[in-house]
Length: 141
Image (cartoon, rainbow, N blue to C red; front, side, top):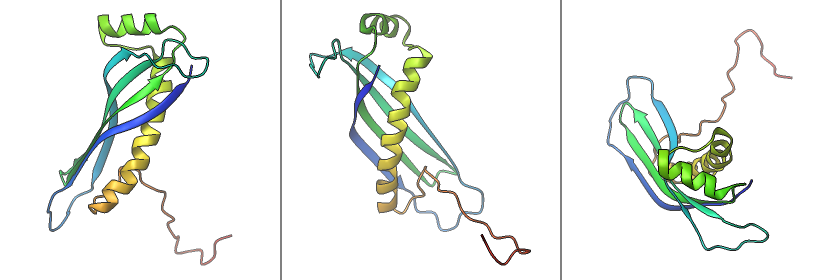
C-alpha cells in the first residue's frame, strides 16, 4: 500500500570547526521509526491511515558535523490493525512495509540534506558520482 506523504518536522545540522581533514570522511545515514499511531485522516479511498514518526540521522567519521531530522510518514497499510499491533507488541514492522516506508524517507531526507548541509558547508550525505580521467585517453566519447 502507498506512502501518502513524508513530512519533515525538525532539522538540526552542525558543522564543527576543523582546520584540516587528514583522513577519509565516512558518512553513514540511517532512518529509524520512533512510533506508529492511528490517525483520523480521511484521504481518498484510504481507510485506517497511520502516522509513522521517524528520525533520520547522518553521522560523520571523523566527527566534522552532524545531521538529524524528525518527521512523519502518512501511510495506508493493507492491514493497519495488524501493523499497529505488531509495532505495539514488538516494535517491529514487516520487511515489505519497511521498504514502502523507508525508501520515501531516504528520498525526502537526502534531498533536504543537500540544501541544509550546503548552507553550513558540510559535506552532503548524498554523494554524486565523479568522473575520473585516465591518463591514457585524452578524449571521451
